[in-house]
Length: 337
Image 1 (cartoon, rainbow, N blue to C red):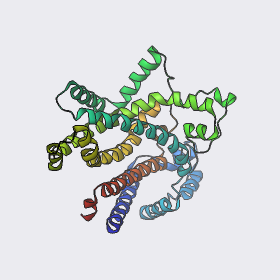
Image 2: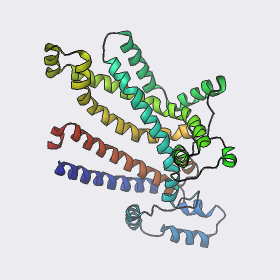
Image 3: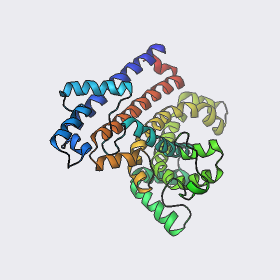
Image 4: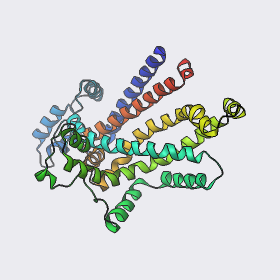
């Protein structure tokens, strides 16, 4: 097991190095001068030269790559051109709201998707048909379109939830929030700000539903397929022959091994959801990683775009690593491969 973990860690480091090199190379192919974007279009030649020296743009490409790679390790991810702040500080500010949104959506997806998959595993009934069709629709529906439909129905038509934002802006004056983690729900809960907590949860519902739709469909389909496969194994048929009920067989013999591939999907869907929130955050005016990435793209802010890309690459690598380790824990045979 120790060799397995060490091998996966080394492979992850190689992949991360490849992500950094590829991202740096692609960013250098983007047209435009970062010095002009940083100093402004009216900057003179001397000012632009000073900015190039400050940002290290006057160095050879390989030297810039070495500096950038070492900066990734030491915490210097460059300076964002549109905020004039260190990229890592910007990411530290915008990542927590996105993690809050994605975490809530993924928790909702697991709580709904796994039971739906278990119910659908009883093949042949109308319940199976409804769940299969519904999960296919959730997987196929564009997330941004679903976000707009939710706004149209639950806000405009029914007036059940707010249209956008993290919380009611009036609470900044009546019940100001003490920021601890940059996660509004968590901070409100930790500080006992119940008015802010209620407003934050109310505002979280629509974007959470939009982000959770795709994971719900994927998890339900994977749970159904995996559980059906396990229910066809020899040891399950032996248990049926011995007279065990289907409920006992499903819950005690088939469900745990069936969750092995589901764990893989959950971890990878988490990484996918970080990217999938870009348009959702823009639609719901959610101040997270997606909104920051969109603003960076509009401003052609290369350092910020690289920072977002590298962060997402790191998340994908860590998600795959987590999948490998959890699967090895659930099935010890995997660690022997």
